Length: 556
Ligand code: PEP
Ligand code: MG
Image (tube, protein in one colour):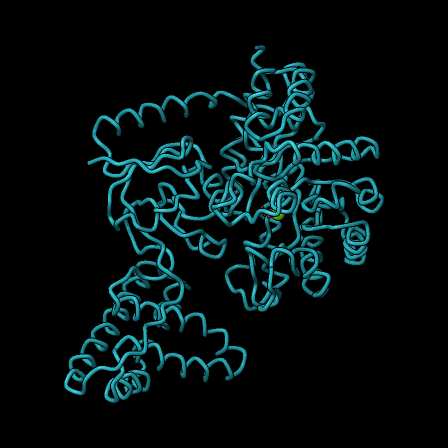
């Protein structure tokens, strides 16, 4: 029978498909004792699991080919290492369960590897993956990490970290549902980038049975479990109608009276460029470079690897603007080699620019790679720092850019309320501002982006957030410098009109949103946008602000 659950819709569209759960990262089986007569059976169970995992890894290797095949085959060999298996059997013989024996045997092997020089230490993550696969098989729970599926599915997770999402095969993911997360969590951002529907902050999501058929509506936040044929047909028809609307739109972003507002794309790497170009992006307003760092969180990618990736992006927008954000590690995007492991409150700790200033070599390599990538290209390269708190931060970043010989515009993201409050002073050091409304909301309302329970406070329509946007935009105007928005706020077509009315000079968003924003902006004059902005700021809540702007723009 059909049942309906409701979360917060964060990426529009409808998807119908089977549930696949994201496996939990680390499975620690309980340390319980088994009677001696069960040891032999338990040892056989362990051997079968090891063999099945090794065979699965080999099969995946065959399918993948190339470098991936070598890695997967090496993992299969790790699983079958005779010393490891002997250790597992010894542990079972003295009373361990198969899963606990595997867990403990891998732990001692891991300690050996970790202390055995840089190359072997780098294999620790592969070993952990093998262990997790064997333990998951023995426990009969989903494999850790992204689902092993060849068929398209709807992904269910507690929340998705950038490191998880980097491993997803976008052609298989029909949509997301997460228990945690708000409208600006990475699950939401990724879903919009992929153009798939997503729902966050749905408390019961983890209990949906693996393989259950569900339909999700990313606008209303509804999840229909075992949808009826009529419901499926109605949702499909609705989705098709919504999708058809903006496809005709093209050209630069502008209000109906010709006030231009460049519409730029948020990307995570060269792989996102094609969609951006297809959506008619006028450039890139936010290149989140941390995605290049996620393959191996133990070290930074080489200067050559970075140069090649940046060049691919720069070449795609020959005359356009490309705004690259230097590495924003920490908090929800931790990197082993940069992020302190023991911070009591990582979102308020050493993240973003703070960690780069603590590791000047990492910043220097990135800036040098950018300088090399831009050599000889006519592109307008702009480079900005995340998490700038004050003028001193902005100066430190601009100095580092100059020292690296970078010919680009240097900018600061406004993600911390102090930077919005003192935007004119920040602009004494840099040439542009870019409002990261996701973090700006998080820090303004003291509401963690990853916590579903406070997602109400992540709503970018909050008048207090609009006030801070207005302050930064006004500072830009006063200093004759640009102030764009690259947070998720820019992807809401109605809010994009309000932001324009507040004076922001460009809007950057996931490529899939660009046609919708372009079409909506083109319906109104700048003066209408300004009136909508003033009406929204005059209210007391996000809902009221949305309604007030809507009323002005629809001429009520
Ligand atoms: C933001 O905070 O608004 C932003 C654009 O950066 P990220 O979402 O990557 O933190
Ligand atoms: Mg941010």
